Length: 324
Image (tube, rainbow, N blue to C red; front, side, top):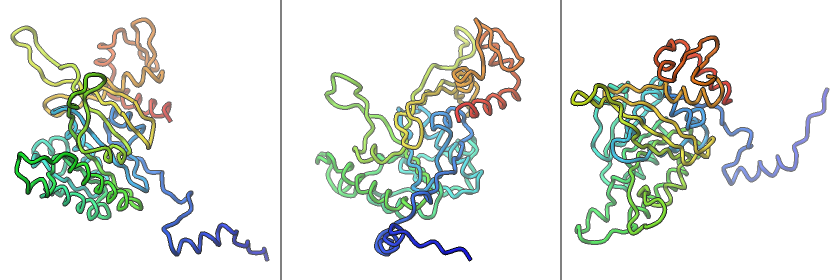
């Protein structure tokens, strides 16, 4: 009969210490599940998708007004609902549009909407919601007023008040999410730093603690307009959305992608997929001729228009194979 392995000194020490502290073997930390949003440019800059890991994934989507932040948050909700995961939407701006959300594929009958009364209440919400829900979206984190500010006259200063409360909220979130896989999506806005003469004057409000807490930060900007017709009959039907990952502690940072977004809610993956395929030599370019497998087409626009849909699905699979 084989001799039973004696516990190591480390095992004995850990057993005793685990009675006092929350401890586990490092190899037991779950970092396997990655959820693809289904929108290639977003998955690309996320380095494969959202990490449904122990410790959760805290993502900030920020940018100017009408740059696509809330729409892409809704697309994440749609994907989580398709996977039968529980979602809740903290509507701090009281601006949730169920018609637009439905157009984006969200099942409104399966989504809980909650509106906070104060910034302090937001902290309590995160503490209560993280153990219950798989996805929490807050739109937006800096749109909620602190209780103390609400009680003051408008002309009384409140500098730094929101940042101090957000610091406490970050601590609450980190504690609550430590043993969970919950994804939290924070929608944020852009502001300009007062008196800045050099460098980038733009910043996101809410204090430094939020920026440190986020695992991933994605900047949204409007790109070129998409127009049809000429002269007086010219009509704008959409625009490019430029997404840049400025921080990613759960994958490769600094990736950038462009997606065509139309006012009717259609998102065209082709352009961003095309450029990624060129970058990773899935599509080859010789002069003005683009080649994929045996298909050769002259001109970028012709290639984008003429390549069959089934080939685009294959290209996406081939790109992910190369990236991995």
